Length: 387
Image (cartoon, rainbow, N blue to C red; front, side, top):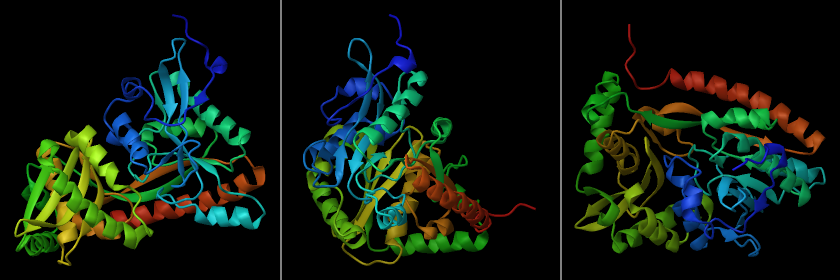
């Protein structure tokens, strides 16, 4: 079969991912990242956590995946893209850009977001069986931006291997920091503690003892996760979401669907008192990474948050032979718990020359600040210093 040259390819916009063939979508990825799977992205749509294109945009996220297909109509490339009417649920903050553009008389919304909804986890953003299609997909996103009068396009939490593609396309690059735990060949949690300074090691031991006192902690995955566990976790998630974001991003149905379609990729850590769940942390299992996502509790117990979200995740990653734990956005308190600063990257296409120039100047200064912050934070990690 003769391949169509990249400059002659055509792309189309679908109304969602759920209606696309799961096997064709998943063939565009290596399966390492659970969040770019058809199961996860379809669950966001089918649960009503995001809207299909043309459904009115009640959530502010309208699925608009950009697709390239071969002569037989099979998927060969895709961007998980969403038309956004706000900037919530992205974790790369552009509210100041929106304010500046609107003060200048422009409309910042709607915009196009290439991302996994509500998920600040690094992963592939250009999905393709043929690397030659990567740049045409970005050009298709640019064309959509102009054709339907969007202000901009934003790709967030891009895996490092794909950043050069966005640079080649001329998109603006933005950096931020997260805190990740790295498995340096530890055989157990005690081995990890042995790499810390004496004072930090003692502090972590004390925190774990205090957190575990009077509670039973269970790690559940696959068929071990029952509907009553999701009911309890939904209650925890609602409380945390209401306090942090005003309203939870995911619907209750989202957790049911995720449990039905990808339970083997989920690790749910629950704390029980008298056999009643009182707190929980939700993680997703990748090929080489454990991704911490949501947490909540109905009791106020010192250090329980650290235990369920960070220490239990380290235990699980070591047991599963994973190389790292990504603990989500923000959180300088993670540093003292052995999570180290790691740079994250987003890319931004802004067609208006004046607005692009202003954002470019901002990003140049911001990148310098992020680099300086990382150097300072690297010196404050709790690990023993050699020599």
